[in-house]
Image (cartoon, rainbow, N blue to C red; front, side, top):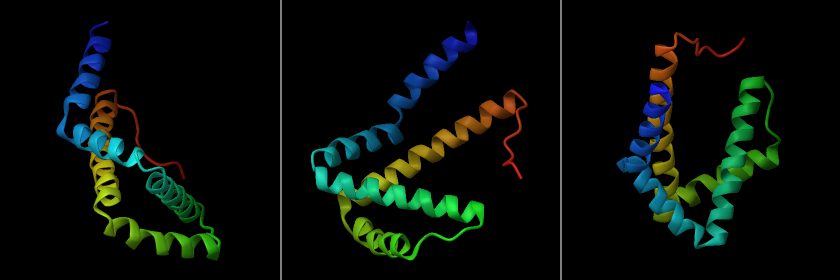
Length: 114
């Protein structure tokens, strides 16, 4: 059970981290504005589609690619949405670093298939 106790402590430490607190603050503020949050979610969905197309060697349809390219500068020009997106990226990076440490400790491969 020591590993689970450590995992619970890690979860608490993550919630207490500056990265999480900043992200949670931006998220809470953005959730008060349904339109802005809807745009962010659409943007992230389009980003994910673009990444999946890239990884699979296919092309995203022109309409979605154009929409993605139009949304990016608008979202990053607004301090609320850019703060949310940037803080989310910083939190995700921290989580990826933690995951890398854990998988290395367990000697698990992290290679992408293919």
